[in-house]
Length: 120
Length: 120
Image (cartoon, rainbow over all chains, first blue to last red; front, side, top):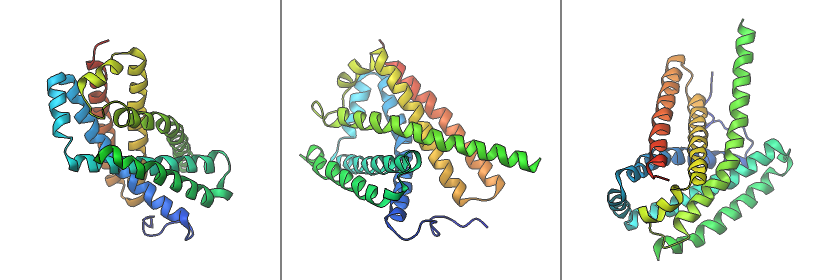
């Protein structure tokens, strides 16, 4: 019987479990976004006027907020992904907790200050 | 028979595990650069006039094409891993696998059309 890992994570209860859950949720959000993104950017093929009109329609405060959120999801998934590559390829499993906190600090440090670019 | 089948499946899993990490490294660099260029450099406004000069260069086209292929592979492979974790029926897995493959082909075509719509 296959137990859903979501409810039965194979990790012991430490930050690695949270990293696993956030990495998975973030990944799902990103593939959903990529679907939309590929179709929206295809407006380039319709020419300058059509593309600029679409981009203008997608630059309301709500979309700006979502873009800032997207940047956060990207950063967390990216830095935690490097942590996973280091664990798998560089034998860093001994340091996985430390690496999680390094990834988490880098994510916050690049995400929070980026807000000014989207809201000002 | 059963043994060789299991072996093939194991090897296939190992390859997708490996490719997931290789594409991750390319995406780490290119996706972060992509987001920074689009949102943190220039006016922050996405227009055809801002995008076209880059996309008319053959080098950017090549980099973006690889970006598209790797992002789709990484995202859809990740989605497949998630779906495999929560489904055990053969029929349902086949359905999801076909859906992912179909979406992958459609998105690859749409994205490629976008990249080549901006003339050199």
